[in-house]
Length: 226
Image 1 (cartoon, rainbow, N blue to C red):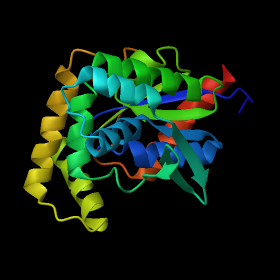
Image 2 (image 1 turned 90 degrees about the vertical axis):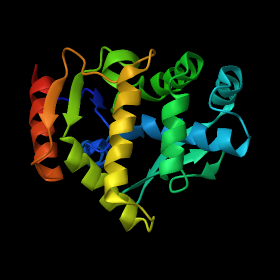
Image 3 (image 1 turned 30 degrees about the horizontal axis):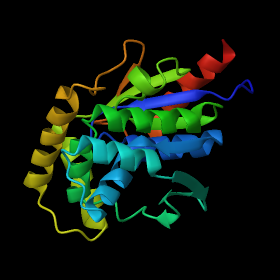
Image 4 (image 1 turned 120 degrees about the horizontal axis):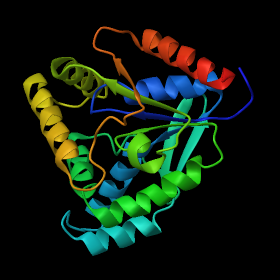
């Protein structure tokens, strides 16, 4: 592979396996992994702590502009810090997930977050995952993937992930939550979830994480050789 440090965008709906794949891919490539969804979750957590309502666009935009968000990769783990506090686990609850989905509809909030994301990724050598990376944040990313899987499979994966973290969840409800999140993400006015025209679709329903990564690395190698 050439030495050019690429910007790699991975978009897709909730539960498609974006985080798992993006983390592993970044590790293989020696790149920084940036979970943009976690940035919205960080804002959701701080908004909740500060009593800022999900419809208070000015309050949320101001809060977003003031947050100091960092990703730190150590010991094969990626930790997210907000204002110096490790919030890696606290932001992974269904409640924070729903608040994040609501506040991400705000144009002001998205502008602030996109600024932060571009700042983090502008030098290349990054794998960013989210819902609008290839369409809005880095429309000129070197490689764009759209990772998807069928709804029931995504629900099962998210359920398993939450149960492993010791959360009390119901499989049916988890699938419903994901369907709700999909609708919310696809129908919002600002940066809705959609596949970029030049993104490569990978359906992970029947693929292992390893198989998805192999497919991605093949495509990335071809890009580097061009």
